[in-house]
Image 1 (cartoon, rainbow, N blue to C red):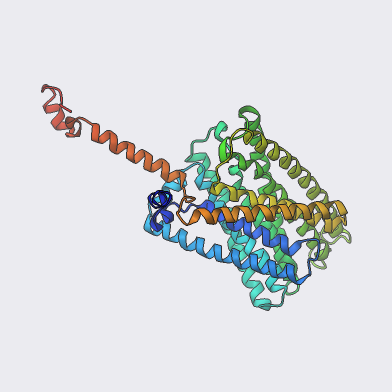
Image 2 (tube, one colour):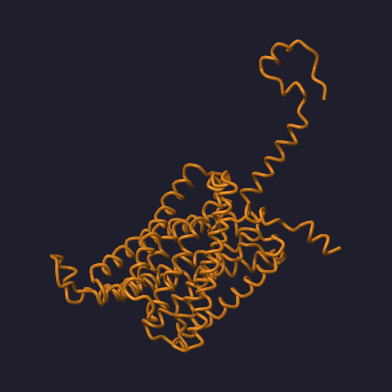
Length: 424
């Protein structure tokens, strides 16, 4: 009986492709954050086992990125109408931001693991730099275009707001951190290219943080007025850790880099030519990163309380949304580890290690649960298509129940306006 039931509910490959949403790139983001954690882990970071695990997660993430790109291309080639339906959906369209963020994690690890490991040299580094600029362009497009669509094409209600609203703007923050990773090795070949990368990263991280704070203010108001989201939507309460953690990490990288790049030996800027300009910027970046870590910790506590409240009586069904837990927690752990490196604090070292281990366990659980649901396609769900299909089916049902005369043309109906009532 179970086998029969499974065969009846199993989705075909075509249905799985049709329901393959942009939200799946959150799995690329999450897996990428795990590979970064292995690379930056504060204990035995130079050991062979850590390097091996970093390679494993990097190539697993690269494989997922390639497969997801192929499925995404197939989706919009086979079903071109889905693109406009998805853009008009007030939630699914926001997940477009996961694409450049997932790609950015691959670039970051490629710099730290492959280039610094001696592969490729200058040509490979500049290829990654070009890919980063493409990622920045996509991030800017997501931020400005999607937020504009939210204002002009979507209908939003505060009561239904979730932290998913952050996704389009966090793209800038993630791209900025990747720029901070790239700029340091670029300085070996071109000081001007390195400084340009640091400057662009600083500009976009402040854009992203500014927009994130505005959205989080509205989100806190929504939580106070209407309570925590119900069902799997409650998992979005962890998303505020993402912009706080990643922005803090990005600022630390920018501060470190500018400390080495400044003071400038050329140009007419009195500020950038000051002897201690780099040191001042570095100290300020640490202070701001510490403030962002504190805010991320605050949101972490609120998130735990929200999940405990929501699951007190009802168990959450496993959905694709669980992948949204990995990246925010991963970047929070990464910021904690980076603060340890800057401050040489045992607390940040221990807490960052514990949190990293917990995030790894969470990733493993979500990954295994996902595999158990992929084989029959049960995990492939597209809310925008479900709404469309339900509306289409409802329209067919009403059309079937419509009186015969209702299908006549206006002219014919007027001509027979004096006739007897239509029969069913």
